[in-house]
Length: 259
Image (cartoon, rainbow, N blue to C red; front, side, top):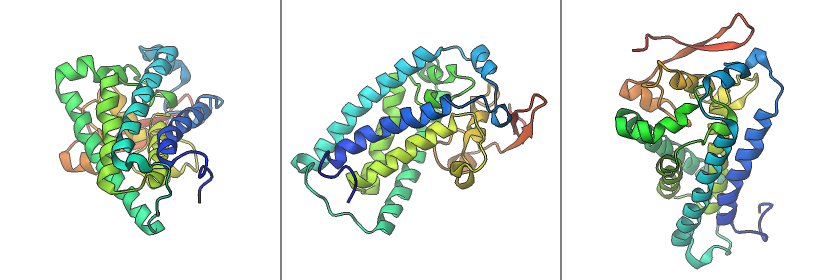
């Protein structure tokens, strides 16, 4: 039994819940006070170094989410057919956890290789992926700021493949997609807050991803959003240490020389 049962289908909830999570969780980060002590970059750096403004970022994210809704509903129409409003038997909780873990690994695999190819192909980087890297200093609601084609290839199709391969139900996918979105937001937040569960559980976090968004780190730390195992296997892994800056903030400093 879930709170939306009897009101909307699991398929619709799986489509719209991640969008609500994105703007609520991402907005929460944006509305926080400066918290300079825990920031990887100052807000002044955001203004000076980023080459795209906030309204453009919001517009880009909304466009991606529009196409995401369409693709998700088409996927569920194919998978669930006319049975979307019928109650589906949920597997035991341990099976659902295993399915979510499988989906995480599949999503990481998809995103690593597509993401890396977008960097290695100069044409695709220049005209597609460079949109995302206009945010040199990342922030929460810029997590899904991409060229629409990249949003389709990396996020939307990656999520669809993860859902299908894992064999999870639409109801389980609500939790998986919401966790994925929240994790992606956190990775782009630029805030190293004490007690953050994502930082405790995952080595791939905002400090790890900050290396990738630096000008010297573009060829490293491609892995997203959960585990860094593909970076380690493929030789693109750069560990980091958090160092206190003189101005009171934090710096994610690479522990190996970057080319």
